[in-house]
Length: 175
Image (cartoon, rainbow, N blue to C red; front, side, top):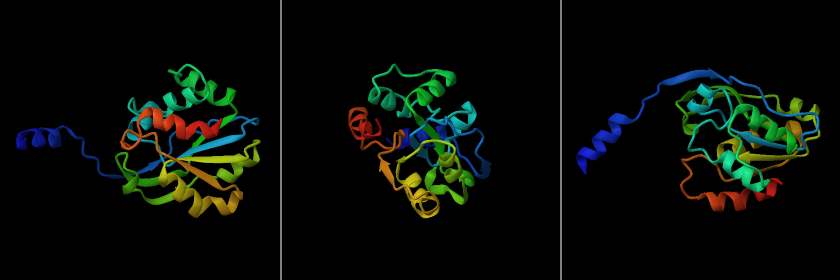
């Protein structure tokens, strides 16, 4: 058991606290009605240059199930899925210092201009993918938008308390 624990520790990547600017834009159209906000892109999402890029993240499986659609695979398919369902997708944070993908490590966060995005669309509902996004939205953005956000359980693989079926059930409210 001790040897197994040592091997796991060795296989984990260690990331330093790094200053990062959000590397890709919001996905929305003027017809978007529902905004889904994450906190900040994971390392994998930043590498893939698109939202929820970690293969273990269940966002695309959950939202596809909610809308009765096939799971989008490519970035173009994912963008089309968001737009066709009158959704908008962005993150609360524009830039921050972060260690790897850990929301708990976020420091010196600067938030995105979400009120400006809402003004360019028909967005009248806001959902946050997890508690960190929800807390940041409530603290820094709600007063600018006047739209209360509903915090949904995170689709992150770190949220082991929710299996796929339970996530889909919780996320049905976005439809």
